[in-house]
Every structure is written in structure tokens, then in C-alpha cells.
Length: 152
Image (cartoon, rainbow, N blue to C red; front, top):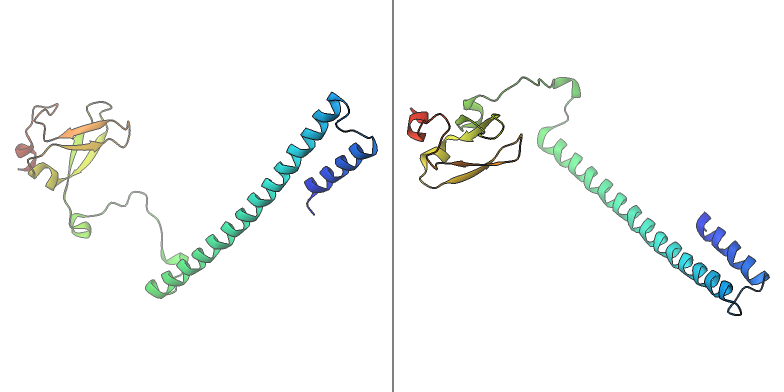
């Protein structure tokens, strides 16, 4: 039995020992509060059980993912990889060319796929810095440069 249920059972015993009940307004309030606390304890037990089941499930998924990664990539030492924050992907690595443009709101550089500029339709791009929408191909660039000029 968990500590909350133990304490609640103790309080119910005290209330019964003191003959707290429906005879007085205070007794009705206390009995009602004990009923509410009992329901809260049952709900807490259900939530705890569900949380434990979710943790077991996530652990199983994590184990399966680890097995899958080892199968796909083989066992790799963590020392083999060094993260370089300044590392940028070359065009050959991605096969995608990006063009830079400035956000009209915060002046932050935004990278946009070159194919977006080649299309005729207006495309909305979200600035990663200020979260404002930037319209691409609406022919209103801040430097007065058209999309065709950017691609040359």
C-alpha cells in the first residue's frame, strides 16, 4: 500500500473513532473531503501505473532502436566521432543548392532551396530567428534584386 493510501486510511479511522458523520455540518464536510481524497488517491494510483507502463514501453522501443542502429551501422565507438560545430555540408554532400536571403524583419540570414526561386509560385518561408513569414517569389526583395538575378 502506498503512503498516501495509508495516511488516508488512518484519517478515515480517526473520523470513525470520533463519530464524525452526517450528524453535523462539519462532519458532512469532513466525510466529503475524505471521499474526494480517496478518489484522488485512486486516480494517482492509476496514473502511476500508466506512467510505469509508458516507461517500460519507451525503454523497449529504445532497446529496439539501439539494436536496429547496431544492425544498420555496426557497433561503433563513440571516439570515432567528433562533433564539429563549424562543420558545414558541401553541395556535393546534400545535392541541394541553397541561396541566402535576409529576413526583412530581423535581418537574419535565411537559407532557401534554389528550386524555390526557380518556381513561379509564391512560397512562404519561416525565419528561424524571429519566426516571421517571408514570402519568396513575390518580387519584393529588400535590395531590389529579382530572383532571376540571384540565380545567375
